[in-house]
Image 1 (cartoon, rainbow, N blue to C red):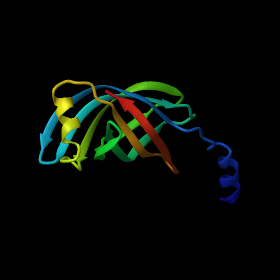
Image 2 (cartoon, rainbow, N blue to C red):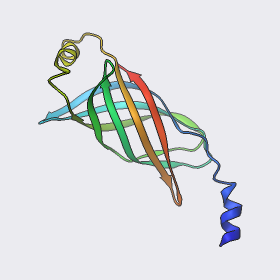
Image 3 (cartoon, rainbow, N blue to C red):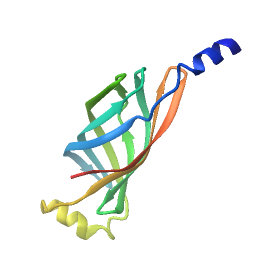
Length: 140
């Protein structure tokens, strides 16, 4: 078993998976303080193995202020050695609404707003598991 582990450790050298951009964001539903969005995420998986996004720990920022937290992301399989568009559905738990009311109002009035995602995403494949940082990916 030890020999197998040592031999495979070289096989599992990985590069960071990158969330390149978010586009085509559409509003789906709003209940209580939870907002459901659909979007296209451009994700680069430079590794030799396909992986699945298992968990996301992401903050939603609006004009550099936290307005919510991604509480659910559907499981997505990222193909090996590809940069690809993936359709994603996100559930966002809104926080600090009162302090961000002016910015949210501008969004509702179709004025420009700068949204960002920041945090981490966990991926896995069989025995492999790794967490990658998402550093302020912007979208509108």
